[in-house]
Image 1: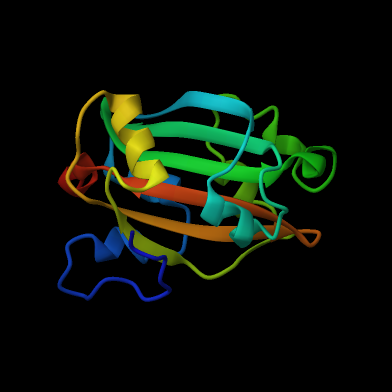
Image 2: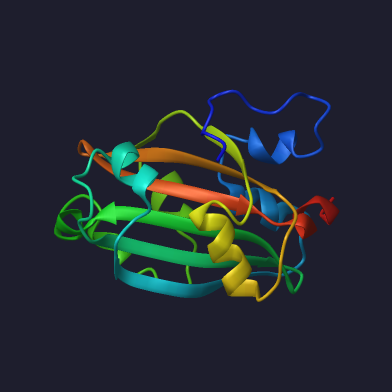
Amino acid sequence: MNRWKRLAPPHTDPWRPWLAWRGSLTWRITAHARDFRVEVIRQGPHIPNEDEYRRLGQPAHRRALVREVVLHADGVAVVLAHSIAAWRDLSGAWRGLRGLGKRPLAEALFTDPLVARQALEFVRIDARHPLGRRVERVFGRDFPPLWARRSRFVKHGRPLLVTEVFLPALLRLR
């Protein structure tokens, strides 16, 4: 399985402008689409993937809040977003996550001056990766290898891990 890397794909890769974008992906998508919608797939206590524990600095096999949403642009799914916060932080730094509903997480992250984004990491995933399998289950079909990126957001010293899996239709947005 490929490992997460801090180096974005080369400038010749058509995905690079989307992957390397440091601002809100939601805001960038809405700038390229007439209609935008967030579909909540799941939100609740789940056990994160093995590599996510280490990135969060959380003990292995402990439940966390896992929020998964599909971002739709002009009626087409373009991103599967997968966010994780330690359960104990839902009554502290990340208490606002519980009430997001269909609102984009970007509203909480990019408008709060107390939230700092750390470095982006990138990987190509397929069905061997837990998120690759998740994408295939959510959409009920196979996909070619997909680009994904993730970063930690920190508020009051507490991390939130956000991973975005880029679906092929995203490249059709102009």
